[in-house]
Length: 134
Image (cartoon, rainbow, N blue to C red):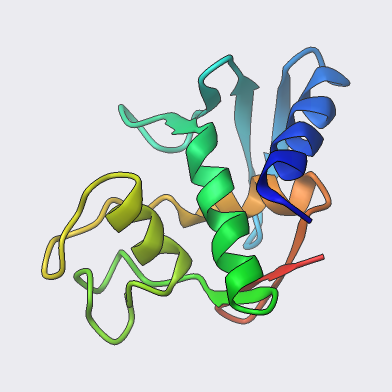
């Protein structure tokens, strides 16, 4: 799996649904997601609702580099670089490389819609605290 193929898979899945869909969350419930040219807009991230395509590219790259698995990370209870939010976690990696956060910074939690979209698209599966490349 390469990052460009992953983005195409997500786009094709959205195109089958008129570019908007309700996506199930791992712990129950759903959120609405809309595909745009810039990425995916989700209704469960408040004013920071856009997940640009680069987010999904970086997650797939991280999973590939880590042999197909990576810890999700805990942005709710940890600062970047803490044991629960390492730079090698998905949440930590995205915060650092996409959003420019530095070690010690608080991070806005985005893992739920990111992982749910990747699972919905058939690219990943989830395990306890981790995302697994299919």
